[in-house]
Length: 269
Image (cartoon, rainbow, N blue to C red; front, side):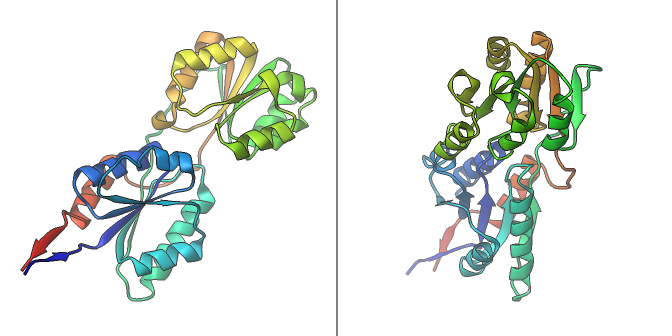
């Protein structure tokens, strides 16, 4: 009689381009894998895949630790957004605590490629949204904001922000509601899901007559190159919020680790 022998499972924290690629890799190689995404939109991008189990909704550190222990997770791949620092810390801590219970858990941070763009006078790097706002207070001209809804409230410190500022946020109900609450509405609000091609970024810059384009350094997967190209073509100053420096592995290396750790499920006598 043959019985299924389950290999140790892999847990991917995704919701990003990297997370989707890793989920597709697990599906294609029949690797026993759980994929955690925070939103229904994140789920919709991978729900067509076979051989993976999708978890929807945010988990706190304790819930992560419990899930790792209860589901025989031996490899955790953190492919969350590079600016989601708190989530990354929670994942890392949950893995460390699971190890204290005599469990073998490997934590891997999957990082996206950095983009190194510099055009004197046209690309300015800032270390936070707040610093970008302080700079913009001393300028004139319209501003296209693409740094997300969570820190959008900081831009309300800019004089005449309702006239000067245009916000591009995710097409989710919480993001839109928060933007409207802050006074970004009508033709000053764009609810869209990226990443975007350079021509769409350029069209928005021209429509808003933006002199400044504020974004985060999201790497190639987050469409940073297309933003830089569009800003140059529009003659707008690109203000970049630099992401925190971190160490980790590429998508390709993470895929190799998945194959080594998970392999294919099989049966035996």
